[in-house]
Length: 152
Image 1 (cartoon, rainbow, N blue to C red):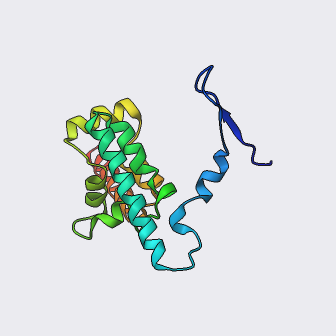
Image 2 (cartoon, rainbow, N blue to C red):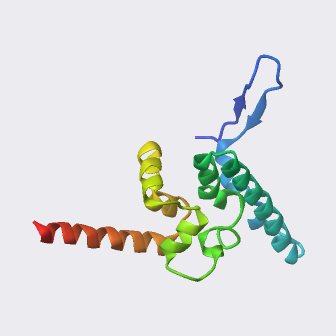
């Protein structure tokens, strides 16, 4: 059907806000049309700095989940090549880069966090369209399953 705007009412006295949820994925400024192509890099650089500040702010407040959700949804705001695990560098495996980007902690901390939230590295990789990390994680899972069957 037609994209319908949504009214967000936050209180009895605040002015309602309108948004169109279906448009958010169409609005990544870094993918827009630019008359001067170098402006695209400047816009992506500014958006990346703003996004990093938001992510770090949530992390400093102790909200690792919201911090990671901002990371996972970053392609909505900044093109993947400008911000994401692919932009972290080329050292290590794709999963190592994803862990670095998501600020992955100790195994015990992450096991508890995954049990609480239902999110894991594969979910993040899929949300960010990180095909190298997805392929590597699925290969690891397949190897684990093979070892379990062989042990029976």
